[in-house]
Image 1: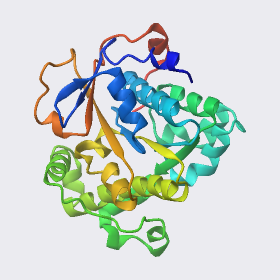
Image 2 (image 1 turned 180 degrees about the horizontal axis):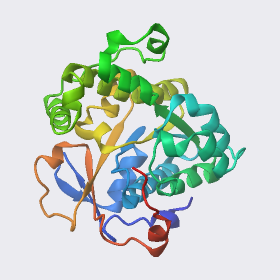
Image 3 (image 1 turned 135 degrees about the vertical axis):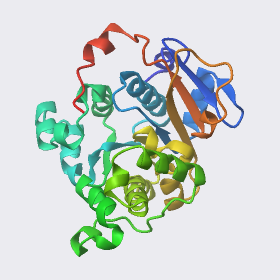
Image 4 (image 1 turned 90 degrees about the horizontal axis):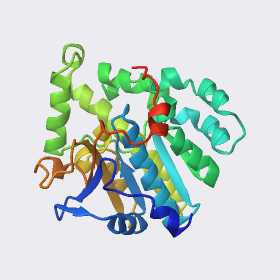
Length: 297
């Protein structure tokens, strides 16, 4: 990729703008390029059904490739780690897209339209990058929510990452508690078990990325996951940081906004290292809209 390609990546057109939360100031394309170039691990969140959030993730990947070359591992929440061999075959072009979707059971495993993620996978395949399946099998997370970590059978416990940390971040715990109390989960589970399930979920994904980076010192990482796993840097970013040493981390929370705010709300500015404001309603391009198919919830 050449510098001319990077000039096409504009953060302020078509409903995009970026703020650095420590300075609370808007940053330019050059600032974004520098930030990503200096980062060893980049985290970009998403609202799963928003095509423009995934285009922001692609922009981050393009800039990371511009700075780092082929030594990049892109980790996906969308696939559990038992599917890594299938993901390897797809990333290397050994199986077709249709074969990948069938073997990975994408519709059941994830449920959101693959076309939302296809540009990311296409870039990975074209540039011959590494793709990582980060997630824990859903049945294990669900079982922990029901019976807690202690209730898992010995075989399932073998799949858990080491050192599962139950978050003590008050803002993150309040965020999880609100999510728990505002849905049907409060009638089904104990909050302590829900916390343990979320911790396992985050730590499993963080451990997979951290393990790869620890074993492949020349690589940089990009984590693709929902905003809820990024918020307050308390989920995946916290896990990777505690499992690695001397790496520079940059987290991006994607936030819907009709216009780029002059002064973002104080609470939002605590969500991550950078806030990527994106107008979900503004048409990005005819091609993007054509690729956006109905979502299977």
